[in-house]
Length: 215
Image (cartoon, rainbow, N blue to C red; front, side):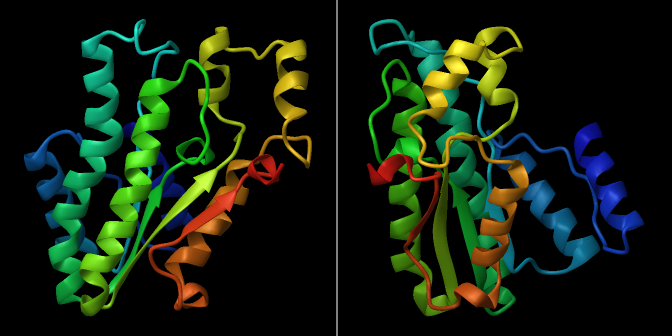
């Protein structure tokens, strides 16, 4: 809630209009309440960006216990499902819109010791394609956005806050541009998918991965 409000304050100060809402995406009641507040204070939504993801543990399927597996899927997949259900009726009433699911390049390629995370991202890509087919007649476009390595706390989470230089070098060597993305570079991709600039795109995945999947 505090982080959401802080961002909303910055947007309002810059001349935009925003509200900060705390929402538990694993709760149907919470997602419905959040959507209702948006409609009441900002009007019917025409864009939904689903980007929530829990900080998951590394491990193989033998090392990830059922509780961890269920937690990751409940947030990463079920959360997208509930938010979409909460927002879509209002978007349909508004005459259409754009839904953007944040997936990952790891939804398209295998990644050792990340079985819970990669399985959710693959599921999100399929949800996006199917929603695109289901709601095209209602003028709703649904696409996924798949980032590569982005400079956020998710990167350092497994290394107690600091990515060792040798690990960083090895990781970045897999990217053609040899660097991590700045979060703003992903934001521009989301803006593209939200805008009329992508009006002929639906059921697609926008891969922003510095060439990782190209080689």
